[in-house]
Image (cartoon, rainbow, N blue to C red):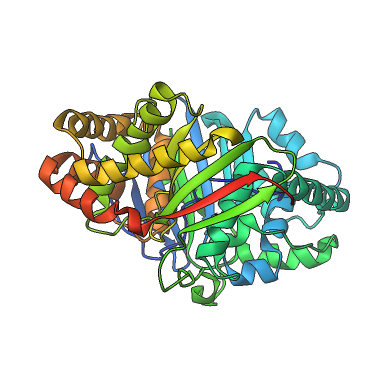
Length: 442
């Protein structure tokens, strides 16, 4: 846990937003469908992926508020949540070390969580440790002051990175100042170094309704029920609606900007992004988008990489970014090149997009993309902990269990004609804006 210093540019937004309905997921072979869940009480759900092949247990306790929430921003909830692992004497972390247990406290865009993994025999001791983490009030003031300094240094460092400035500019052009999708690309606000203020916020988070206690590994249903009982403070009766993030309206509403350039001193390259909004996971055309995106920029021999790296030698990297979830994200064709080659690279970048829209993809490309989307599912199901995490992701977003695996199957079932029809509509160059970061005065 590194503390609240900021996230890296072009990172996908952490998936989140809790759904308070407890459901039982049955079946096998798709996504997180082998997780089961049931209510512990009216405010808390238990989830379990049972697997006794090895004597290990993963535990996730998740709470329905994240850093994108307006309430969380106003009350410095991220700092209040993440500091709780740091007591003055460092005793909590020392206990985790003695148990050889991984312990992580974090807040993402739409949820706060505590994660632990340990040997089955140490589960009771780890549960005791988690109770102490959630209830102690001995927040380390020195750690808070260090975070304040790190945050300032981290922000100044990021502002000097052209890739960060490119993504920041894209988001400033598309989203209003109060839109949560801009948060990680704006200067972070200062936060109080007084632990007593943060303790109150931590306590409120820990008592929110809509909590989940998830177990994965060598735990039975009866053991999970017993372990979850008494683990958390009594749940609050307050509604959680006001804690959920709200997306803003994408701007400019009148249409995309043709080109926008930001200059930076002392750089020798130009960075490009051809941008429009991504579809959402719930869009009926999202499966076609997955196939098209993989062919265009999703691997080392994608259309972008072949044209701009392998054939032309314009760049070391060319790809796509921003695939959205239940919210849209900036979807971008990105690359960079030396400054004296900027015009040629821009022409090639635009030409790849135009040709992709005009010609579509070939059957061999469709088949390869379908194989990739279906094949990679196995890598996300190698451990019970991974299957629990996928269940949590889908629950936060209010999606049915197995949604992501189902997307891969739907994408693989599409015909070449269906995918090319989507490409002709979505990849119209007139719907994309060009944003550049180039050498020049600051």
